Image 1: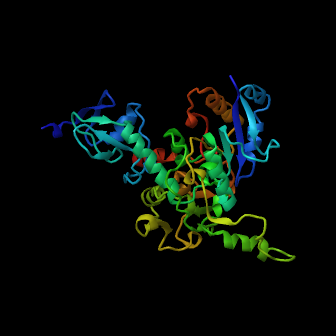
Image 2 (image 1 turned 120 degrees about the vertical axis):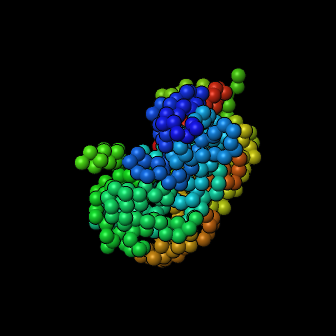
Image 3 (image 1 turned 90 degrees about the vertical axis):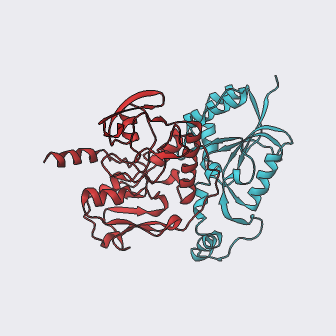
Length: 237
Length: 177
């Protein structure tokens, strides 16, 4: 019966909140100024639940749910920042730092990196896992931008913005598991791909994996907040 | 109350953390009321003392000599602090890891040498295959990331450690800071 009701009431971290049917837990939490850390989520793109940073606990269930894709239900009791969740989030960050070569001090995104700032806000002071030190390539074949696989965390924001917003679908993911790689077209050089040179992927990349060649250096802020506005304008037309 | 014995150590790093430590400027005088520097690249002691209260270790472990030193330091130190990103993460020295020491040495001492190309093998310690942060070798008590950690970070952290006050590292610094 309650599934047909448009408005749902639920409890997030002790606060009673109301939501529309079909809204995600993350959406409702943020509307109510409850912060859940995210990495692969970006306002204006579809959600894929890839990074697991936004995991939350639901009372009565042992399963942790990614709040960016889990929708609200009536009477739900959500906890967003328990000791257990914080521990899991730090471990996720440690895995990301250990998997590729993230050398913050010499990274083009130093000071403007979501992985780096999440590390700080989640209280990560060191990585307990041994670093993998993989040998990875840098694709600098594009005249304006560079892809550095060393810094990529496979959040797929670039894939989604290119396919969903630009409509070009130049980026995709090749391979499985730890061998997954972002590729342009059918694994060709970015410079000779079907890229439209719009630069949206660079702006939405949370780390220094995609960057503008003209801004090499420590000062490379990114502005992904154009996305919701762009979508709004398109809907209005 | 007797002063705490402080050591600072320089493994595979650029000495930037030590420079930042000195950037505490006049606050070093106040710190000197709490600690005695018993071993450091900044003082003339040659031998690591038997009993050290706090050791600040700069740099990653990159050679057999670094490894020997960090084990000795741990054995004679109550509170071991990983100072800066090289000690905490491997940082810039670890950028050779995907390539390996042989290729690096070859590039530096053979391919790019104009006179007497040869890889150094006497006096200098053998490089480890992989550069690693110090906590992969010994137990580390406090991690102080940053490249380098700022003078303010040093001041706040060291004052807290010397006086036993609580210390929230993430509020002070981060990787690459």
